[in-house]
Structures are given as structure tokens and as C-alpha cells.
Length: 376
Image (cartoon, rainbow, N blue to C red):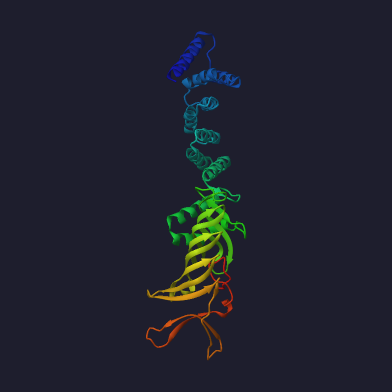
């Protein structure tokens, strides 16, 4: 490489010496014209000599430096091309094309992060829309390099999904639920329709294979929101394995943790609900037990975690999501039917306490939101 550089320098020296001995002194314009002639003829070695002659006279000549960058791109010497394009940007940082050419070199060298940084810098200075568009395309490709998504999308969409994925991966569920309530999330979540969830994974092809990912599903739940988020294991687009199921709307929060198969909760699981309207007396409602196709089956424990630190636990029996009533009575004062589904002794030992099931939900299935008929 050094020999080639010395050879070019010698040719420039001889060229300028010959000109000096002749009758006409070559000007910068003459060298530029000569260089462009050689460039059109694809005589790159002689074109380099001519443009280097310009730089010997005027080191900050934009046309010559740009042309040298262009030549080294054609000869696939991208590091050299970068050197000259960077010089042009240093001379005049308002030339949009130079940032585009620099970015192209970084892409060809498989350094997309540097290409994006270059385009971002150029856009901040010039506000040229082409730089922004190219930057968006590169960011999109970079985001999708190892990711899987099953719906048409754009850069902003993917950035929100990556942010959600990172929050879920960190285990910061409280922040996740606040994020689910945000306008930023709701704008992209609206793309999920009934029967067509949004599936996304940074590391796995969860549509055609298996691995961990996130899904946004259309639930249209009155209390916990229109869109629910799943984070966990997938197999060919179906929720299979361990996973979280989250919903949030205003001050109402919901999270299910458990095992899934065939795209439904199956096996052990637990639910935690935060009700804004019950915050004065109840911090959390906690349910845990066995589920079949998203519905409680067998014994389920229903706990009330109160603000004073006490825990009130009620064992309830279910048969394929339908609650088992152990006693039905009529309120003496109101005539209202009471459907008791669990009972236990009072703390003072004087009588029993009962858990009453609403009449309207008596024949409705109960389980995980999105799979049950229960009315909250």
C-alpha cells in the first residue's frame, strides 16, 4: 500500500514538473477537468493522480476530496473513501450527499451503528429529509436483524415493542403496567385485532419456531383494558410454556403468571388484581389454583391482601370454570339470594363467615381474563 502511495506521489510530482517546464501552467480547474475525464473513462489510477494534484495545491478543495472518496468506493477501498468523505464534511458540514456517502461506506463495511450515527449527525445539521429516511431504514433493518414480527410495521412501532420487551425482560412489572396505559403503547397496540395478535421477539422466530417473545392481544375487557400483553414462551405462534399475561386500564391492574399450552392457560397459575376502587380496604386480590383451557378447575384459593397487612383466604371449588355453590340462602331483610361458595369460622368462634357469589355470575365460567365469561 505504501509503495502504491509513493508511486502516486511521484507521478504527481512528475506531472507538475512537466507542466512547469511547458508553456502553460496547469490550474486547479485543469486538473479537475482532467480528473473527471479519467473518471468517466474508468481510468481510476490516473484520476487519482489528477485529483491529488488539486489537493497538493488546495487541500480543502471539496470537489477533489469528494471525487477521491467516490473513486475509492468504486475500487472497494472503503476505509480510504471514508477518510476523504469525512474531510469534506469537516470542510463544509452542510453537504447532505456527503453524509449519505459516508453512511453507505459504513454499511458496506458492515458497521450499521456508525452509519446511523453519521446520518443522525447530518440530519441534525442539515434537516435534509433524505438523511432521516435513510436513517429510519437502517434502524429498521438493524432492529429486525435478529427479531421476528408478524405484522407490517415501521421504525417507531419497533422501538416501542423493543422498549416493552426490555421492560418485561427486566422484571419491572409495575413500570410495564404504567407503560401499557401510555399513549405511546396504545397507538401501536391498536394494530392488534381479534384473532390477529402482534407477535414480537428479539432473538427467536416465534412464528415459525419456538422461543421467548411478546404478544399484544385484543381482549376488549371493560375493567382491565382493550389490549392485553403476553410475555413468555411460544411455539409456532402459540403461547406454550411459562408466561405472564398483563392488563391495565387507568388504576385497574391485572397479572396472571402460569403455564400455557395450546395458546391457553393450562396447569397451575396465579392471578393478582389491583382495583383502584378497592384501594381503601384491599391492596390486592390474589387467586391461585389449577386451570384447564383458561378456566379454574378443582380447588382455587381466593385471597384478599388488605391494607392493614392481613390476608383473608377462601378456598373455592370449580368444575370447568363453573363455581360450586355449597349453600343457598335468602337474605331475611332484602329477600336477595345468597350463593355461598366458601365458608370458615369467625375469629371469635361465634358462627361462620361466608364468601358470596354474585347471582349474575353463577352460571358463567371463571378463570383468566380473555378466556372466562365472568363479569367484573
